[in-house]
Length: 102
Image 1 (cartoon, rainbow, N blue to C red):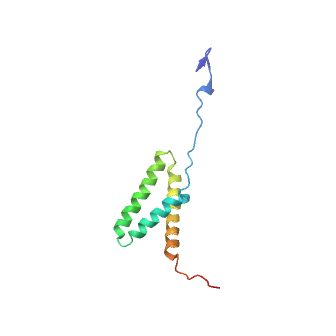
Image 2 (cartoon, rainbow, N blue to C red):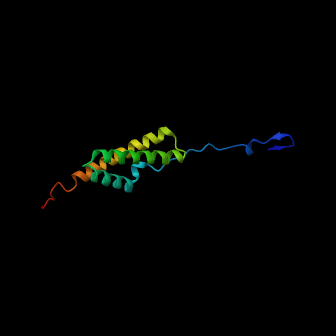
Image 3 (cartoon, rainbow, N blue to C red):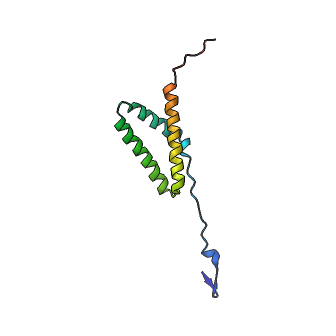
C-alpha cells in the first residue's frame, strides 16, 4: 500500500508459518487399531502389507495436505511405525507371564 508515494511494508508483510503436526507416535487409538488389524491379518501377509501401505500413505497425504514439510513427515512416519511395532510386541507378550501369587 502506498501513502503519499511512500511504500508501507507492514501491509505487505507476511509471517512465515510452520505447521507442527500432532506426533503420530502419540496417536494411541490409531496405533492400537492398526496393531489389532495387522494381528488379525497375520495369517495373510499380503493383506497385512496392503493394509500397512494404505495406512502409511493416508498418514503421509494427510500431513502433506496440512502443509507439513516432507522431512518432518518422514520422521513422523518412522516414529509411527516404531510405535506400532512396540504395540504389537506388547500385545503379543501380554498375558504370557503368570501372575505372582506371593
